[in-house]
Image 1 (cartoon, rainbow, N blue to C red):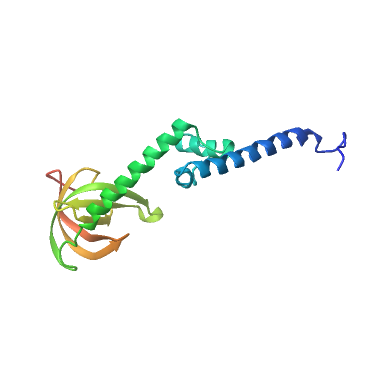
Image 2 (cartoon, rainbow, N blue to C red; image 1 turned 135 degrees about the vertical axis):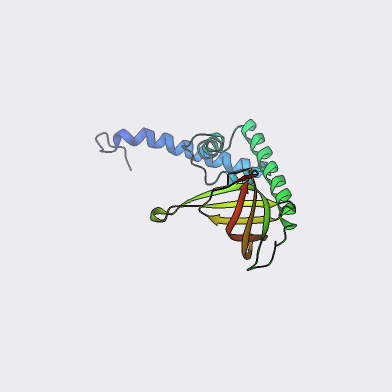
Length: 191
């Protein structure tokens, strides 16, 4: 098709050509990078769901892969370190979590002494806020309490509670407790 000077899309003609060339070059560089670097696909998969227009390191790596076909060498090396560190961390967690056992008997009340490792806040709308307190006992077993109390991350908690359930989540044994009483957080009486 011949080029027409008065075409309505004339203003976009050269920018479209430039963008097409950039995209084609990025695709070629990406293919060459994947062929030459055995960790390339792993890096692409790791940043797959990041926003290229966002801020931060992972977004910058994603932008480099999208716009230029590959990240810089320093970014690539940092990503490999990050991926290896996460893999080692997952292996360590899997080993630790594989040793978890159920605590107590379902339906019976017993004393628990745990350390809060993480607290998740759930907005219940008209019913108020609920919290999931993810705790570990002295034997590193996971004890979960979901209720209206936020015991605070890192705090030592002593309580009497009923064992509601023994569950398995992502292959990890967990003891779910309910209705804690005589609660002491860091040795002080709780509400």
